[in-house]
Length: 406
Image 1: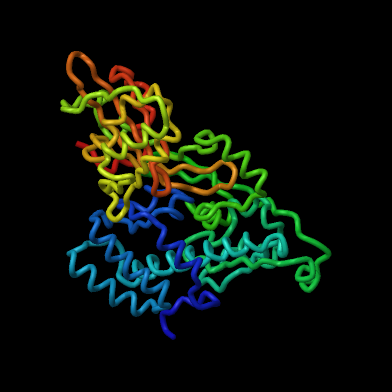
Image 2 (image 1 turned 135 degrees about the horizontal axis):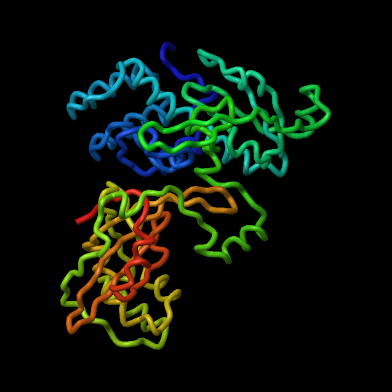
């Protein structure tokens, strides 16, 4: 059928799930999000309005889940552009093809990666298969039929797609499959060298493996789902808690032109009594929340919410910190700022989008505090309250993309 991306199979659940877990992320340019960040965020370059992104997301969800063609997507594209009066760069034909094919191919490969991780005990190798792209890259042609262990580091940067319009794929293999290819065993990962690419807008220079387009040197499946590790290894990473994660990106409060001092909001709230037990802290927080758990909207991230569970918060809280419990709902109800930061798990390579809520309180009588709450994967993960004059401590947390700021 004309205009249909032939990805070798009907849509499957892991592919659909991958696309639907993405967070809408307005961006003026394609390189505002880099590499694996695209595995966790949905963006269309130049689409800055939330409702515009929502409509594009719906059209692409229909294409991915329903298998609709490029021609059908173009009809939806035209309606969305007309509805919102969106002015975009490039021709209609080029722009629609890039949006459609990029999202279909990356979601397909992410879903396949998850499937291959699930069966790697029985099929521990992956085979690179060159696709029928319009302008074949010599390196991709050379990688055709390359077989490496599923967890070989080469796949961290060379798992397809490896560039705009790339149609390459991977398949899971076992030892018998390798023999059928005429090989005695897996190959050795090739070393094709690197090149330097400089972002003309920011001046930042990155080192990219040859044969891969800038920003495509990542494993979309690993970023979306993470590498499956043995339970003992995962337990070790769980014990590291926050230290298992590394933030990505360099943007912060200063580069966004935000004030170094977070303004102190007058509040009628007061610190509560010290509570000696987890059960008492849980009951107190549930009273302040108005329920045992509460969902809060994330300003600047339409459709995304944070779950605050009184039992979970109390379980991880020291009694000495219990007086600050009355302030927690206020941080989510009316934050001074909300930041979105991409973080990578050091063990699995999984990328998560964390949110940081910031607010400062003037409690009267010369007493003021800074409160910071963080959430990852839809649930609150940590929060802290410190003296308001400790600006350096809070400014270290004001990083990433500013979603909302007063």
